[in-house]
Length: 255
Ligand SMILES: CC(C)(COP(=O)(O)OP(=O)(O)OC[C@H]1O[C@@H](n2cnc3c(N)ncnc32)[C@H](O)[C@@H]1OP(=O)(O)O)[C@@H](O)C(=O)NCCC(=O)NCCS
Image 1 (spheres, helix red, strand yellow):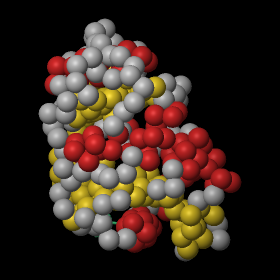
Image 2: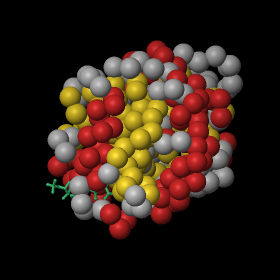
Image 3: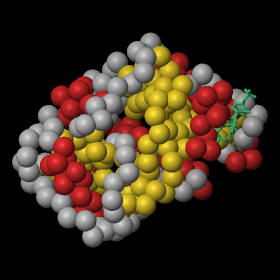
């Protein structure tokens, strides 16, 4: 088995693998991530082809892991473990390496040394809630990333903002990114200094898409159904979260 960085020609197969897990990734997601320069998707392969993948995101002081997936017929033989080690190796020395895990894969990460930070909620918006937002045109992504999540690298947010719509709260500073992708319409991140305006911003962002929109939330809110419980896990220093100012996480980090 060998590991290499995924290239454009691999993306259709990688999308197919993620579709079988119901993750709704598109080829454009892989391209956009790659173009940020701070995200790398690695594949594991043997003579028979691709066996699995992992995406690692370098947020400067923090490393993020996503898309850890092994082909169904190859699970349980140590490939996931090796992919994880390879991804963590590429990230190099970080204060923290973190990820979102579905309930069913939590034990896999815990067996590899990850510790539980907190439970989160992957939700589906039901509609019928009212919210308010404005469009201001300039957003301090770096400040919110640093203060709310402890990251130091706004490249992923700039990419998400360039392919989505960015809204601002009516009171105070903050932003919400809305992605009206037909395959996976989602909202996130949503952050705001003012708690009332932040919740209203979350609903305004949901309403840009309407019922069916997805998001990963730090706490359940009215008007949403939980699709699945998700946990944030970590290696190293415990990641920070400003609970008062974060209303939704970036959905692209899930998987
Ligand atoms: C999770 C996944 C990547 C694990 O890959 P894998 O190649 O099957 O895992 P490995 O064979 O390397 O297992 C490594 C260790 O984790 C354990 N493990 C793996 N999957 C597990 C599970 N679902 N529940 C409990 N333990 C699990 C193994 O027993 C092994 O422990 P050991 O070293 O003590 O024997 C794979 O099951 C998968 O692709 N799942 C679907 C996609 C997914 O949900 N990914 C996670 C996204 S959050």
